Image 1: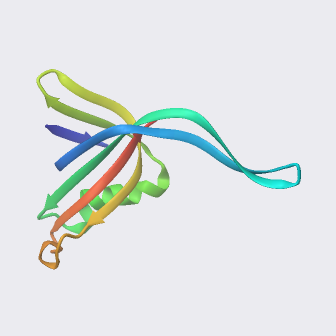
Image 2: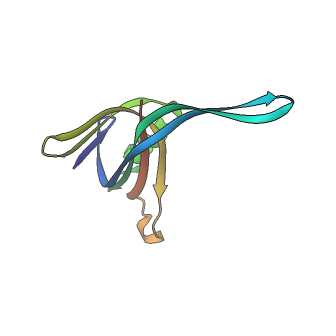
Length: 121
């Protein structure tokens, strides 16, 4: 399996795929009473990528690259080649980049585990 996000090839431990419900919530007053309104807008495909990187300085790491992209809401391309003819090609936005620490020994300067969550736009 080969995974590329934003033109960067990722070394992944696993790939999860599912649907994310999209909704809108707002506060309202009805008959003098506060109510919380919710309306469903649909769903979008979502992927969770568990990644590793080794022997990469933090400044040029994939983790830093994607961590810096989260607040920008940048749109990027996700390409997943699963083998054979099966391929996922999607336009996504990065929702989360999260560092994973398993143990003090695994948290070395040039070995990183991180998870990325992306959603189709």
